[in-house]
Amino acid sequence: SDSRVLNSALRSRIMSAEEAAALIPSGVNVGMSGFTGAGYPKQVPAALAKRIMDSNLNGKKFKIGVWTGASTAPELDGALAMVDGVEMRLPYQSDPICRKRINAGEMEYIDIHLSHVAQSVWFGFLGKLDWAVIEVAGITEEGHLIPASSIGNNKTWLDCADKVILEVNSWQHPALEGMHDIYYGTQLPPHRKPIPLVRPDDRIGEPYLKVDPSKIVAIVETDLKDRNSAFTPPDQASKQIAGHILEFFEHEVRKGRLPRELLPLQSGVGNIANAVMNGLNEGPFDNLTAYTEVLQDGMLDMLRSGKLTSASSTALSLSPAALAELYTNIDDYRRRIVLRPQEISNHPELIRRLGVLAMNGMIEADIYGNVNSTHVMGTQIMNGIGGSGDFARNAYISIFMTPSTAKGGDISCIVPMVSHTDHTEHDVQVIVTEQGLADLRGLSPKQRAKVVIENCAHPDFKPVLKDYYRRANSYAAGRHTPHLLEEALSWHLRYLRSGKMPRDTADELSERV
Ligand code: 0RQ
Image 1 (cartoon, rainbow, N blue to C red):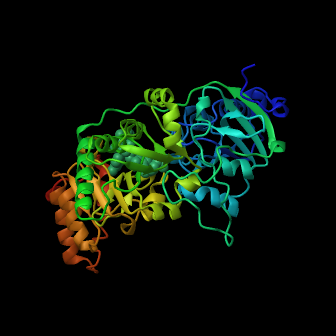
Image 2 (cartoon, rainbow, N blue to C red):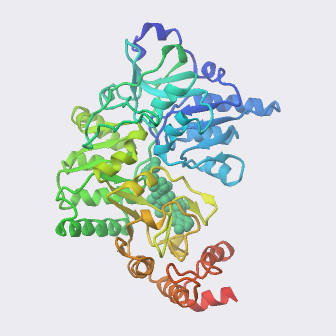
Image 3 (cartoon, rainbow, N blue to C red):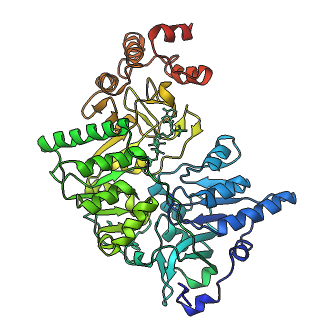
């Protein structure tokens, strides 16, 4: 047969998704594969969701803890959230149904730095991991697992779980074999050693995941595609943001603070991040490298054009068209792309050593440079911090970017005080909007405020921000980081009450009366 389960002893454990899902009891923690819409299990979670629904209809609550690499797709997060089957979700999600449940208070969610997840499990900080459900591209004769289109936390899930279910997906291209680098040298304190990676494309591990075969209770054969959506062509604002970043890099090269081939690039999720890669692809820099966690279409374009010589990531977040290109020229890409566990792709030691240039999206920034990446109006989770904190804190230069306004111009993304803080002023060096770029290195809080307002705020909100800052600087109790505490979050309150943030001073003053 054309089964990808080549190990004969394991072949006896092949069963249907329904049979496999029937083995998982309520109340357990399940580590699942998946990072962005890549490499997540596609049949067992859906079969489990059906079982949970039946159980709920019979009046018996059935809930599990769901731990992943990062976000997944409707077949996993959507299906389990739909039937209210998730007690606790971690560490990153972006599914609309899942998000709704969390914001309605119906699902617990812990937002953890992606590099912290694996070690937190090893330390025992998150409780017991009972089960693992992992998608792989195949099982070798020796019983090694060929990883699929993402690695995420799979190594840790396979090592720590008591019981393992594998989905062997024949849609995953067999030529992925050899692209992965699984590092088995991580230790726990006080026995940790330096991780021997000094260049972004170094291979320091093995191409396969290992698992104790006695833990494998089920193998489900599938043939279903990853769901990564296509990117929209860059809009005007994204192009302007990309332009400001390119200009900044050129300036840094001229100043001798960056080499001509820059330093390894990290680029976050979404359309703006993708647009910046498009900009770099047309820009003046050559022989670039990437040390990142998601490899989106823009980076693949740069690998194809030769601008980028190599890329290290934990997941392939490619649109169907880009994936087709990858597989057409897989023999070339397999040598230039390395997929690693997320504890390595996002490792602070390695990000600091390599001097990564971190570029991430944000929801809002305040005038002093604090950044909110996760919570709309301070309380509603969007996705999660993901790897943005791993990179921002340890980068050579950490850049955060956003259009200057959201929701058709009713919201200013530059505010007096962020309504939730993910990245403090100490971890944020550059803020970029379509209006311009604020380089905050070497500036005190008051100096920062002037540059952020002047360079990044939208003209509709600039006068009100300037007025806030002027009054704060005159009346605040302390003049180091001047704030008017009764007014600092009034912009968000105003939006929640009236659907608009204040645009001019008269407007703002009438609100306060
Ligand atoms: O919502 O679609 O409902 O209108 O937020 O905003 O402008 O499309 O931007 O796709 O780049 O996402 C921070 C969410 C930005 C992302 C965030 C609303 C806006 C829209 C999305 P709608 P855009 P992006 C590596 C790094 C954290 C994780 C991270 C993110 C939606 O970048 O999740 O960086 N980052 N990981 O309307 C209210 C504001 C708003 C706002 C935007 N100020 N107020 N709503 N929106 N600004 C990857 C991983 O870790 C896996």
